[in-house]
Image (cartoon, rainbow, N blue to C red):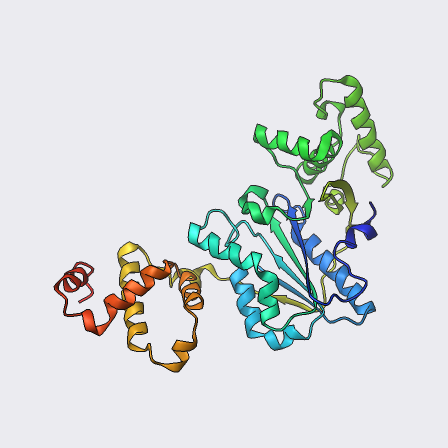
Length: 352
């Protein structure tokens, strides 16, 4: 498959009459060119949109909630667009990571699965929405997010035997060793291809793959048996598109879209708001419940959906179920503050 056919997965000849979604995951170790490839894909799509006179925007962030909050704040601009690319850089480090709490992952997953409807609700009803995830190790993503139509592999760092078996099964021996060789070339200065790098029992198969690799690099004027340049191999990736697998050459040029918004994330600022322990969390929740109870007749608050309110609280580590929320409201209401059991509970939490 050629580079042009690769981009056809993202490209559309005509503007769809609905929100058309394209999702792709880019896997690769540090410094293998994932971010560069993401921006290059977006720049190529921007050029295609310019030919069709489509309005285009590239949004790069690290957390889904940060991106969606920015989109909500700029919905007037979003409505008029024809093509939007969202790239989550280093997705395994923050909210997409399985390291997060169960509730955080559940909310993230729900928003991802409803992403088309979220954009429809803010007025982006006709156009293409492409979502790209950059991640160092694919298992860090939730299985639902890993299950994308397109996977792009920039490197192979599989130290675990089970992972190596899975990659051989997914890619086949030829592409497995191609990915392994270009990964070695990225990290070992002056690396050269040796037949001993192909660790197969069949000497015939070993020589076949070795000769294929030598021939492949020769096409680019590189003698792989002498040296494979470190930066040169970053132009390659192996693509999984449904059942098809092929090598893509995106070149070594650097491209960045003109219509580009980068949404920064500050760990320090967010952590200042997180409760330090369960006791502090319970105290905060009590006063949240009290505030909601006191201002329950306020028209602005009454219009806010409970789900939306709970989603805001979860951003700051205050996630809890709806029935617990209603109990907290009752507990915090002025009508029950005279109850001895309630008073005892508040004293234990040092709330009064």
